[in-house]
Image 1 (cartoon, chains in turn green, cyan):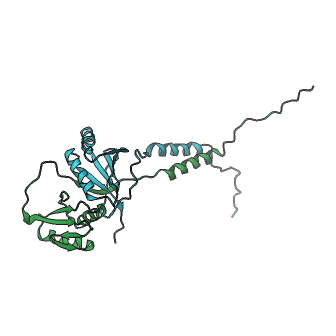
Image 2: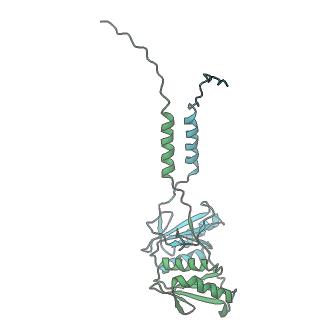
Image 3: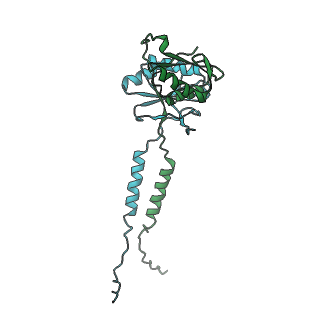
Length: 132
Length: 137
């Protein structure tokens, strides 16, 4: 039996496609990684046992009812008017502290919306009262 | 005027180092991207306009609150009364700790208020209500 002669082959790997593969991987990582920066409303809670007496005149009560209605200083107020009214109050009294008090069955998004409106009104002193 | 004949110099850009460059980019992206540590609870965040960015991920600890009132920290469920112990330890190990509260928009305020009280007891006072961006109208 005759032994067949081996063909001489060159053993080079084509590296032209390498860049394509690397690009594909790069695109995959770029697409799959979501840079989700956490964003939100910042607030500083009062320390435990540091309740201070505040003059009643300097407190503006903002109540949130279970149904989502908002009372500002005892009067019902629409969400879109809230920031304007708070701004007016702040202009009248710059020592004003806005005290936000929510009913325990109130929804969180109403509370966030109220806080947001207070931030729009540039109310820096916001106090979070406990639920009732 | 006579035009000079083009010289026969080949002007090809060498592409042999292209994979190296791309791999370097790839490694850069792989190193810099931080994978999400915890999956949390399925929630839909409320929306707000005046939002601020959290300073750094390293000094942030997340608390998830679902609309059913479940509280989850690091993918473990906690009772409302046990939050303080976990947060106290975290606060003790990192004084710059900011708590990011990721609560569902339909969550009840009694749970949120409970979390407030727990955080106050744990002395973790920097709180951030995680929200989505709402376009100003």
